[in-house]
Image 1 (cartoon, rainbow, N blue to C red):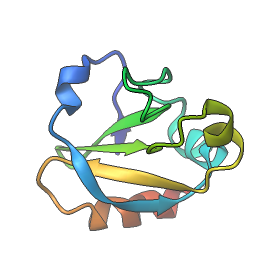
Image 2 (cartoon, rainbow, N blue to C red):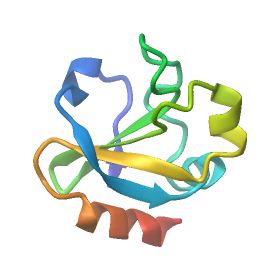
Image 3 (cartoon, rainbow, N blue to C red):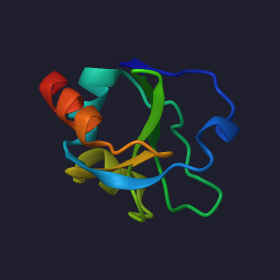
Image 4 (spheres, one colour):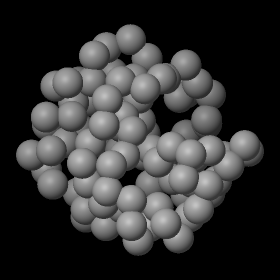
Length: 99
């Protein structure tokens, strides 16, 4: 499991909701480091997003439609997990173990 840094957003285009991870922002930072993207998306639906390579597949972890960075950082406890085609179950289980 490797968090990708300094990547073009095009690498994650096409990922979509595949599940959730029960974790706070702080838990995710402790387990994965700072988000890959830590500025709100153009439509403000996502405030922070990690892009992770897990066994050669790309997964994303992101807040969804909080529209509020402070809420995401301090109160949110369920983050969405996205993938391109693979089910996210194995990734979520592996991530949960890191938390």
